[in-house]
Length: 369
Image (cartoon, rainbow, N blue to C red; front, side):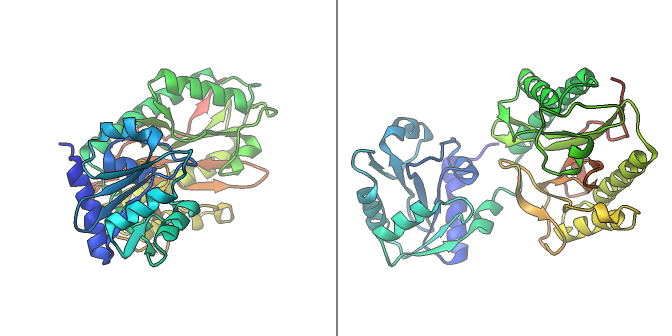
């Protein structure tokens, strides 16, 4: 059962109360979208939703967005402004109306000019960074969230099957990327979760490579594809590494090591485990292999409305992970100038263990092309 706008806003009010501040402010982005159930662009026009610990919410809305804002069903006071007159008076009216002395904001999302506009309107206002607390509300996914993510993952996997079936020796990475994007939209994606990573040969050794239009794939190459569809506001994030025509003994050994690390991470996943414990388990497998010098990344990150969100699966993060958390399990080994292998699953933590939302095969795959 989906939650109402008032229920969602009350969660942010509770964050303010728990932190001992007067209100929480949200700006367009994933938290804003979660709170109001509608998506708005982040651009040069400030757009701010303020949810007090006690009392009704208020919003500062660009005048040209008022028609769309009406669809939200927002019952609080709205302060609008026009490009021709600027937003200073609207900020002054907003802060006077709220009569607050402290405000928690999204440190990774609120832009500096919005921060400055708030302080220009009320110089005594204490602004604190509550990124962890605000974004933390998104960490436990609802059944509706999981359904949207599963749809995005299913679309992605169908597109990957079709793309790999079409790969031919001599194609460029960019041509393969273009095919993948075409397949994602044909399979029903609303958008790309991010620009795909399509990297072959020595390009696969760079974890965040860009598809090249001057590299033609050849027999024996590792082909690493990291990508995802977006559906109903939620992202998929999947990586598979395949080999073209044949695989060397080294390629097979590296792949088997990465797969072993991936499976070890899954084996320890359960509600209450810490992000540190998952990463330590996965990285320890890689460190114990002959390829320890090829470790370049942590195990993974949270996934949802954003491709990278809390929790971050890395040693030193002792956050206990509750049921309903989705994270990426994506160990990899990369040797610059040679090749890289990454295997990435999207994993839902459950009370009893885990559910792998990705179902694309992980066994070593050699593509006949």
